[in-house]
Length: 188
Image (cartoon, rainbow, N blue to C red; front, top):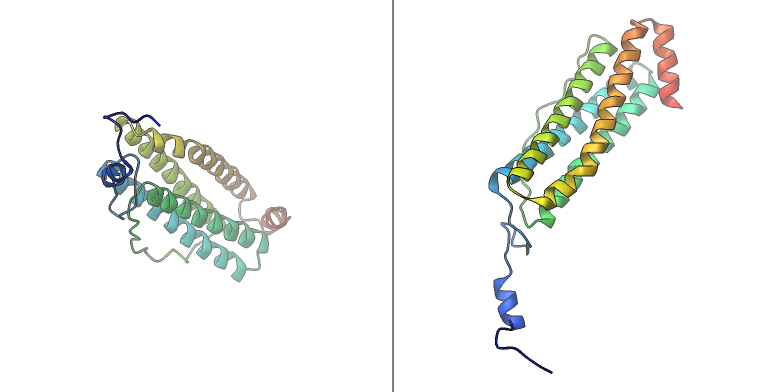
């Protein structure tokens, strides 16, 4: 076997492997501002999950099971997004800090208000993702841009779905029969 004088030994390699704040090995460090922004985004996803769970309860209390089921699934989806971001931070050697969440709104005047607020929350999440992407590009963090590409695509679809449902609820104009039709469609 041939060994070069410049060849690094296994011991030297293990001593030179960078570690993140969590102590986990990391291939490439992350800028602190990007880590903070991803942590804030993770909090947004958790907040959306809590709000959608509260919305699900609001609809359940009014016997609108289709709407309740829709928001229950959205709550689970947002929780999965939060998990995805926490796993990404861990994979990059970062520590995940969970911030406290405010209580979700449980007092709504009408269904349109719920969907308007939900659409706005989705639009805010989309904006946050675009800002993360921009920050990652500026810091030449290609690992993060690759991670964000499918997330942004899914978020754009989610925002579109909420825009569609908001339009349908607005068109229904609080008429019980129209609301029940939408509810039955969401239940199916």
